[in-house]
Image (cartoon, rainbow, N blue to C red; front, side, top):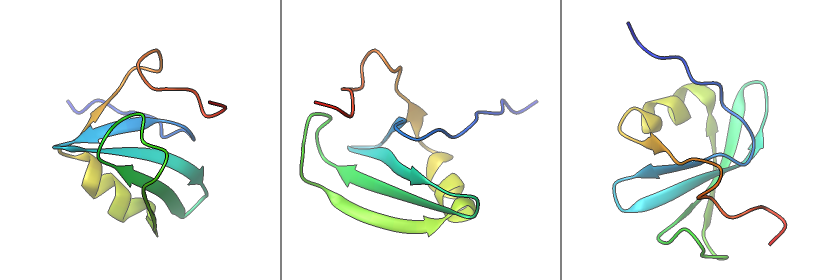
Length: 73
């Protein structure tokens, strides 16, 4: 039985060698930033549909919030 995970703004996912941070979460779209390191300020912003983003997350793992740096820093 698959585990359901609720997407939330600010979540950080690790997919291979890159990190995906959800910047903006809308009803049908997700805006995320991909970076090479977890603490990187610069990254590439992407805007995709939720369906497309969930396909990216099939091979990714959710990082605990204590590991992910806060959005204010």
